[in-house]
Length: 333
Image (cartoon, rainbow, N blue to C red):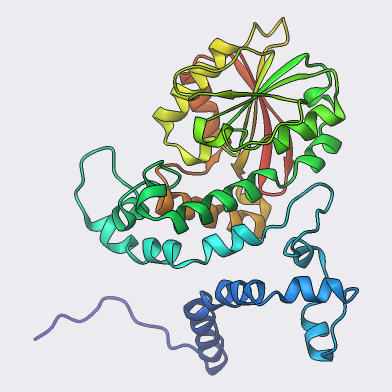
């Protein structure tokens, strides 16, 4: 005879069952939301509405998709406060490449793999996200993700320049690590023309960058050497890496800057996970899961950040400001 459960199941009310059914469908079908968004972008709907002055001929469409702040980010060819369209980002994270990696998450958890553990993305596609070999293995995928990374990285610098007045004003020189095509660095130099700014990135990135002479491009690898400057900036870089790699990157940053008394600091613009942020906390958790699926990195809360700063040999840090899901951190030698 089967043993009876020691716990008595509470029968839900009709209202609870109805709500539970709705919740179940919402969670089960939530993947269709980004699919619908991707479809709208590929059909050019946001741009079409924008070209019609923010309204379309179909009243229902106008009611559903007027040009609210979110939709402005999806209009091609329009820069809002210097921020590029985010269509490339949406198309990347809703692509089959991302979906295939995420679908293998359960199998990935079950494997007993020696360190370092490859991400689900690596296992599915044969190379890490942004790895140079990806350009050979899947040129379409490589192009898609690099365009998405550029859009993601360029977002928000205008807000940071306005909200964090003292972040750059006292600097004479700055090195932007993984600065890509230099868009962020040029925005900083435009606001603070006295700053001598280096943009460090891999040779394949620097070779394609178009220079207007306002910043100095340096081809290199932040794991090996970083051009000396009063400050080094890591904008949306460290969340792609595990703790040990972050410690090594930060150690190179520390070598590149002078003492705190001479104004030396590392500027980090990245996610600071905070459970008090409501819906933004949910976004942070989803972004953490994305890092787990597609990279060997993760998102970090303040305790996590404090730990890797100390292990890299830094004496102190300050969270200058929290801007949405991101935080602006100064780290001192």
